[in-house]
Image 1: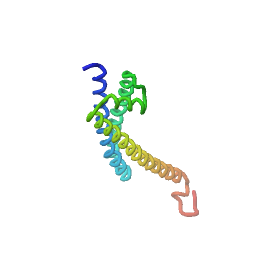
Image 2: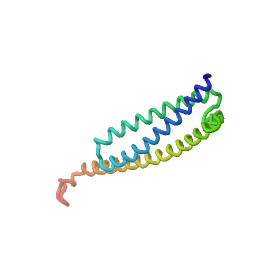
Image 3: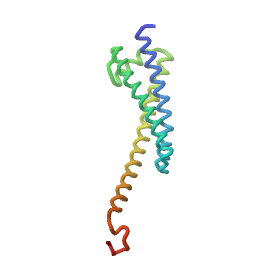
Image 4: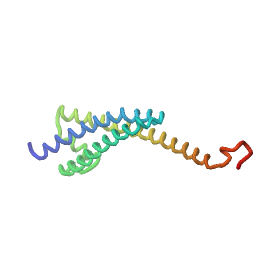
Length: 148
């Protein structure tokens, strides 16, 4: 197997691995949302750890993919991936194209889940800020109209 063939095999496997990790994230992110709604810190922390681990793996593979695409002379970005797909033929190409499309769709869904979780966290933060601001006012604990 030549160096180029090894790189192609690694790139194809990385795309499949990314898809698996994004599918895992598609389960974890809504689960995190539910834990955030319940304010269940016993679930939030382990879920965050699992999500972080998945994201780190995906990030590492993306960096490796960029380097491998450059080593193959394909450049970067969408054009590079298009060039990569052209290097495969037949069923292998169809499978990789299908996997790449599914990966993009999964990444988009995960971004939506992540945004939703971010909005929920921002709302929690805003509520806490309001409660803390209210608690500093002396009339909060005084009878109505009798601030001390």
